[in-house]
Image 1: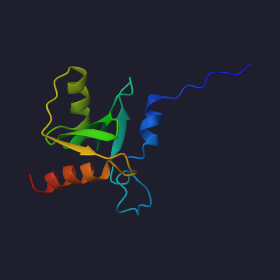
Image 2: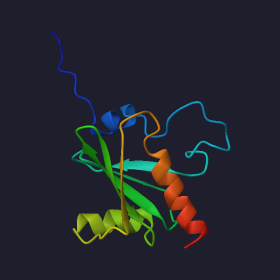
Image 3: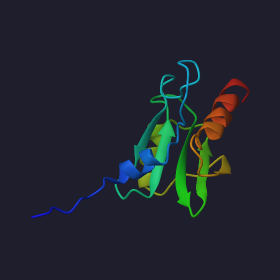
Length: 116
């Protein structure tokens, strides 16, 4: 008897290759503490460094991702605010769906931290 294969919602987000590939230790966002948390329904992914202000969430579009940037919130604060439907983005960026699609958004968040 064959069992039905079920994919976890986070698997499809990991399969979109948000981090890209071919990184050195200096260019790898996960080595700098960036993490992805996928909401239970799989429709939204949250990106940030735990306890550090500046994060974003991503929603799938037919041909890419709609990213909402939060300069003054940690990813933990964004998760809590999103659960209460109380989050208002400081900026938006639409990316394509190529490998490494999250890297330009990460660069924008990190640039704002350096020069608020």
